[in-house]
Amino acid sequence: MKTKLFKLLAVVIVAGLAIAATLPNTSVKDKTANNEVVFIDAKGKKFDEVLKQFKGKVVYIDFWATWCGPCRGQMPYSRKLHEEFKGKDVVFLYISFDRGEKAWRKGIEKMKIQGHHWKPDQKQIGEINKRFKVQYIPRYMLVGKDGKLLADDFYRPSSAKAKKLIGKALDM
Image 1 (cartoon, rainbow, N blue to C red):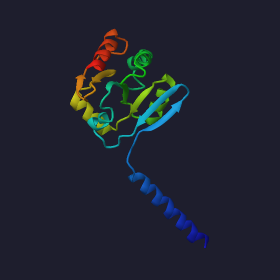
Image 2: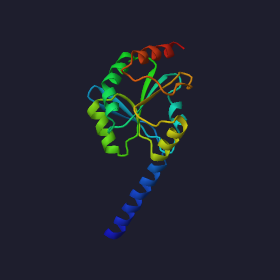
Image 3: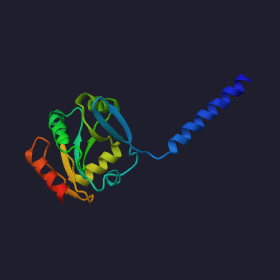
Image 4: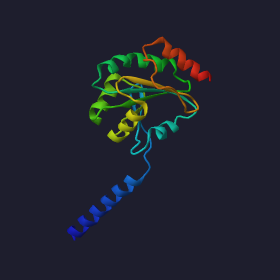
């Protein structure tokens, strides 16, 4: 009797996991102290599909990794820029080239990086590199409210021009 019950329970668990695996991948919101972080689960999705969810907003894209010193050096400026546009139609999308998820999540928490976060898989990174020639990081891009790329090699958050041009994009 116990063996049959155990087998039935195992079948139910496996079936539940199989059903969960077929559910659509959506954003998962994690809130930490005074810091809202949204993780984007875009398994198998292309870059354009990820951007579609932000149509109607200006998107400041930051390609970075936890192992990149210049990337980490720009994060305090990124927080200031993010604060400057709080409540406006601007989305900060951080796309990580980290290989490990644990280091990536720890880096976000440690540096208090607010915004939307996506860690593409290696195939997706290859697509991004090929399409936009992202050969170094940090690298920044700006997408307009209409979803069109305004600049594929945009200013760092530490640049006063970044703030000015994001503001202009909001007025477009």
